[in-house]
Image (cartoon, rainbow, N blue to C red; front, top):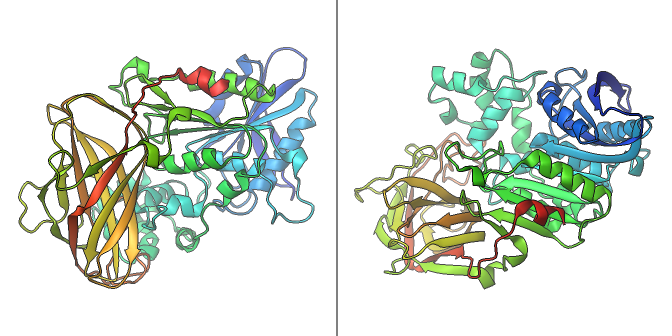
Length: 518
């Protein structure tokens, strides 16, 4: 192998630091391009892996990060033009066959996607097809400011955004533990109001300002890349995890893609790693899968249909998305206040107090129903194992005595020994006349799980999920700028509410790698 570092010029002349790893031999090779804000050095082993399989492999620091000069504005400016210029540069090299696969995870997936997708609003003279890759691998994609900052139903993702901005925002390098250190010094840091000025309280602990923090919350454009993807004709491999906060964006990207699209949804979080206690059968060699898929994509061997595989938890079994029916066909209804569904334990009437919010980082639940802070329900033990694959949703009939209310639903699986394992979560914001009953739909994401016999399902309905999400002040004010908080009295009508789960009626297991690569 031959490794070198070069500067690839962006359209405005900015030199972008790029590591190149070439296979042995002189014949032209297809290329893999990774553009990242997290440091190209972290991809050295990955580049060698691609090169060992016959690909020219490149990792580039995006503008304004690590080895590349300039100013970095996350999700804005430059990424498409800089990526297109790099793809065009790759195609002009003597070692290039002209074929390019854009690869990335998280923000790097965003870089790959914006480079691949034609933008009807692009500036005149922008590099288009010569600068577009021939295939895209987008893992746990962070699709934009709005998608990362807010849930589809509205509530703000506070803890994750504060952590990311503290680690990477408004700086050339990264400090992954920055927020943890700040919280150790100031445990109530994330309670600061208004949220829009949280950076001012963070700054002393970070030793720097975060001038871009307010702009994060000003952006409200959702779905732009998914919409552009509908016109795409190149192949896509979308990789995500059922425990990843961006799982629904991964699924939406795959579902709306116009070209050959594959989805791999494993039992993973954002780092695409299984739980350390997970058995070996629950693991997939993603590097080998990427190579095999890239070869099939570039050779035009992918079936044009939309295919994919969803892991059934850590069981080692995978369910084909071709066998996942629409929610109306596949869902199983678990009514509240029912002996065969979910039994109400307490909290049909509860108080959602933003001064004492239900916490996202604690799975413990109160056993005493007095002064309830959530509605709590429990199922009987499952009489037999249950496979779940597909979209889950909670439909509740509920009332709030405030003009704005968040409704958070957390579903937990309790094994026969009582061990709690998070299964699903969703949160939506509803505004309306105080005291008016409403039918509220709370999407719970795409599930992939195998529940053993004896498992109980515990459902919690609450008004907050803090610090993962900012507290709704209940006053009708924007939670990002609000400084005044008020409690909200809630009522859940069990007889008008139910949980809808995607139960696999006819088991049809697949091997994930062949399913993805056919």
